[in-house]
Length: 241
Ligand SMILES: NC(=O)c1ccc[n+]([C@@H]2O[C@H](COP(=O)([O-])OP(=O)(O)OC[C@H]3O[C@@H](n4cnc5c(N)ncnc54)[C@H](OP(=O)(O)O)[C@@H]3O)[C@@H](O)[C@H]2O)c1
Image 1 (cartoon, protein in one colour):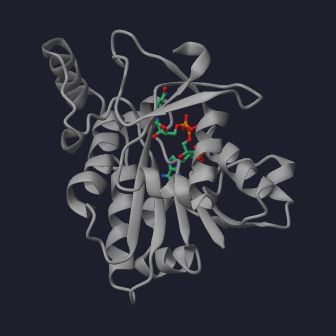
Image 2 (cartoon, rainbow, N blue to C red):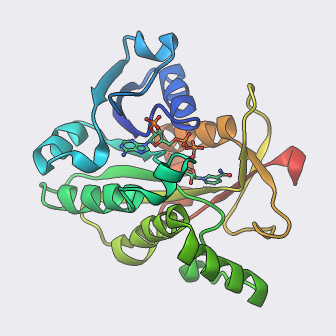
């Protein structure tokens, strides 16, 4: 098995890479030219590094990136700087997810697992989720003023509403952490089909290391994958529930 991690230099992406290495999975990582990797990842024999900006890849580059990878994990996200949030690419995550689903659809039938790092700020209409009036107003406002939020919503919607259950080659899961925190050790976490707290008025916390643990388990544990396939599981650290 080979896995591809997009956004592998990010705070969650690098934890995902470590979790995959721990499970002895060959891992191709995609990072920008400017990205700085820690030694344990950079020099690991299971890790293959591909550099570039994801939004500048040609279809041929993207196909080469995907080649032989049966699991694809996107931990892409906009840098929290003015340029990262308001500059281009506006649809960093959505464009990558859309291109992947479209490109692999042209290939001969062969299933791949696609895991998207989403957010509790995404509300899954097909799971019967509804926001309160106040949440609806604030989320609508955020859609207008925060391009990264719009991008995350569009990316998750692409899987939930467009890709659905019928894609020839993609099985997917969109993992939704609540407010992200950094911890050094994995702790107990809980997974729910839908949010059990308001991400706006009563947010929980999710450590990036727990998100990465769950994602790696989804890659390796078929029973877990089957439980969450085509869903948008929400993950919270138990300590903060
Ligand atoms: N903050 C929260 O509480 C929260 C909660 C739930 C979900 N999320 C979402 O979770 C995701 C991951 O979060 P995180 O904190 O791990 O993100 P992060 O540390 O900012 O990592 C983002 C990754 O995307 C890469 N990237 C950005 N622009 C790129 C481009 N043009 N081409 C290629 N790669 C590019 C970054 O590369 P560089 O290292 O080169 O910059 C980095 O590897 C984000 O989408 C975020 O919105 C956040």
